[in-house]
Length: 242
Image (cartoon, rainbow, N blue to C red; front, side, top):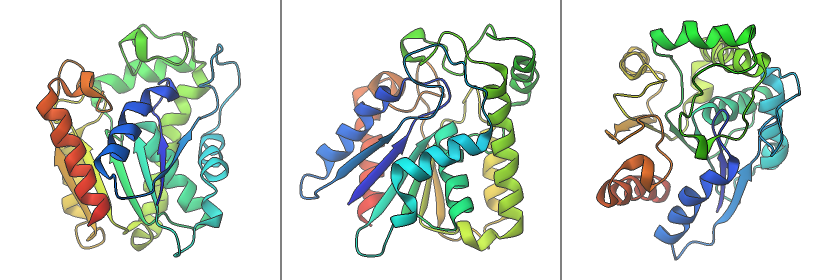
């Protein structure tokens, strides 16, 4: 089994290790090869490179070796926030699919109050509030405006690709959200799932109400309690082994 993980916007890639290690521990009888994607502009330096959403999608394509995916080896994808969109567009570009996919706090729709603030990033280098408020999770102090804009463009490109071929994306998929997410409009995501239930028959969703940052569903701190984290991992485990 290969498990490819992709981090979120301005999240230090190594912060996905708690999640990958917990999944490995929960599946001791499985030989899991972990593949952690590192998106452009998320290395340990100030993000200088001008970004287009295709750069991030191609990061997933190259680092996951998506075009080499075959039926002989299960290859699963887990994307957190922006990482989920990058994984979807990587599949859309290559027309190759992972065998299963998990999307955690992926912004198929954004909370309205946040949109205006983040769109201002087109004109400034460092907005007052990052996607991940806690500085211990940030990849960069400064993210350029094109990086912020590319998040919105990638989301628009996914909806465009989805509307062109809804059946392509109908693979076993688990969505995990917190209904109080600061970034994702979870109510709208749920409505989108209901509206397209005939096209997304293999998609299902679950929710966790976390603490203290509702968007941060990647480690025990984000889940708030030990029981919540264990339940979170057990649901991922059940999905991957079903």
